[in-house]
Length: 181
Image 1 (tube, rainbow, N blue to C red):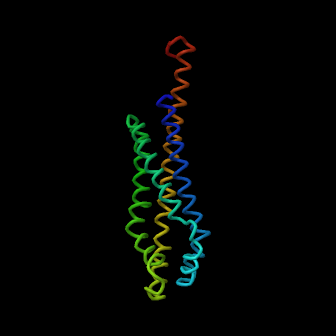
Image 2: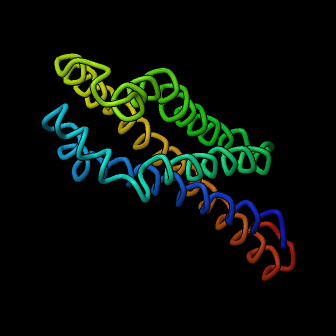
Image 3: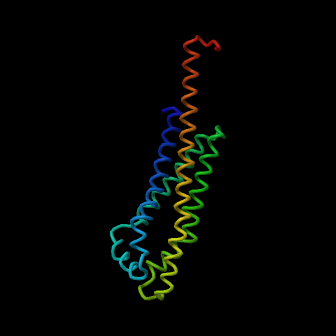
């Protein structure tokens, strides 16, 4: 397979993975979070009981790794295209900053408090405060996912436009016997 096709496939995979991540976060926002954080600490207890077979921690880490990996591969494949490369690097930076680093520093400690520490360890007031902080901070993650997806999609559109123009130019040169028009 040609480098152009590999780049196209990797950029499509990047857009797909980043949009799946963003869509998952958006779905959590409207479907899960009102139920999980709506009436802390009782809603946190219900969430512990409900999220037994699987939960966000089963879905997002592998998907996040896919986004980062496809960003790295897409960056390598487009390194000689600086006007395209920076869209991908920006998508990676936003994703890593908002989805990984912010999550590790902000969300993971709050998840420990709400879902890992034994029930009764923290006061109901403190659990309500932590739940509210989590929901408020979640908007950073949601915005980061939207920006990452938009940057990745822009990179794909630019790549497709560039390769389409290159293909048209090649066909025109072939049809005119290499003469300049």
